[in-house]
Image (cartoon, rainbow, N blue to C red; front, side, top):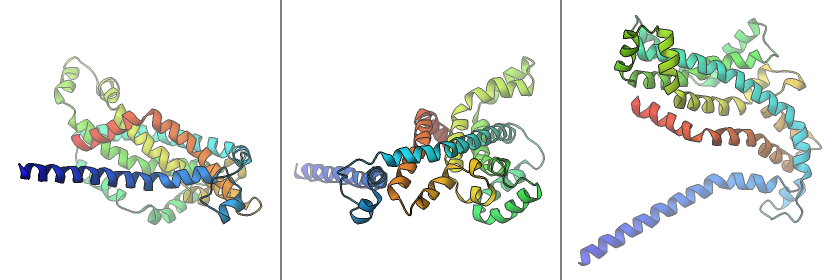
Length: 280
């Protein structure tokens, strides 16, 4: 009887200890976001002198000014992201289907090359990538961003799509072939409709990477009207000095599109990650 109570106390302690640890981790995760919200409605001088204070006056002007400065760059970033993601999904679906369902000479070697490219850090690819874009005379245009994004970000998608398509039952495809269906019809009407969770996962992952990218747009994109959100939100610090209130308000405004898009697709995003991991 005493052993039972000892075990019960031990289990209870572990239960509360694990919940307490999770709570601490959640606080650490959300604390910077809450601090950003607090800073976005304060004057810059108050932020510098008393960071953690509750604002006595809500400075909505931070949001007003940041919105009119950032609305065009946000639209530019969303346009670049949308065009890039369309290309990424097309190549992801076609390449993943080919690697997952077809047998051809050099298949494994080619797929190992895909994985090998994923192992190379992006910073090491910037110089040769910059030279290629310059030779193609694309500097200063949206294609200087879109083409490298499509080429680089499809690799993760192909890895997930290959695992998913290879896990689909062969009987489903054989039945369609026996009915006289061509391979393109099988891909469009059978394989593609069931792969939307994977494709949405790739789309959201690519959107976050493209939308938040700062270094590559700074190297290749020029012209005030073409600049992206990441480029302009940093320049908000140049308006009369370092205005942390306006800058953090810009970050909040710029985060809204990502939050809305990710929230609307969260169920499919998590499902795609699980399917790509488990079935792979």
